[in-house]
Image 1 (cartoon, rainbow, N blue to C red):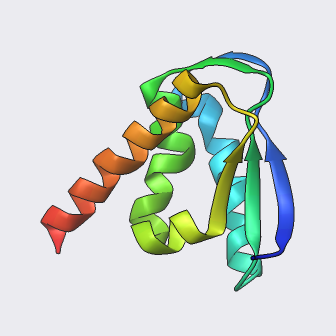
Image 2: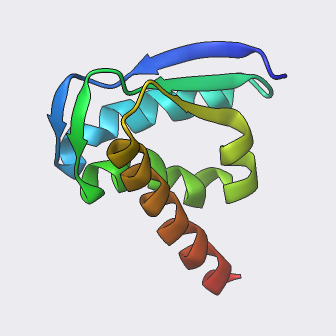
Image 3: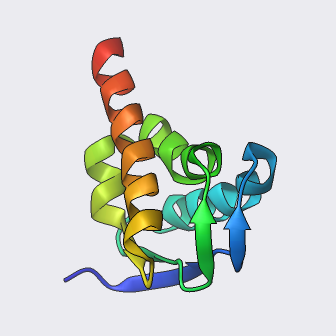
Length: 103
């Protein structure tokens, strides 16, 4: 099992807006870029709802930057409700399909 190198905690409440998601994506990307192996936990404990745009900008965009296979090996969603995790999974899958049509 991969070693956890950092836990990124998303803020409590209802998360919306691409602009608000960018700092969290940048933090995740920086940690992954600085460590060639290891796992980043994304803690969703306080997240009540997450918009598709926040989920895409925070995590979906990482599919385009890192590749789908690499991303799913390097991040783990923890403490999230089923609806929040599903929204993030949808954003990842949309980007995965987009990546596949580009190649």
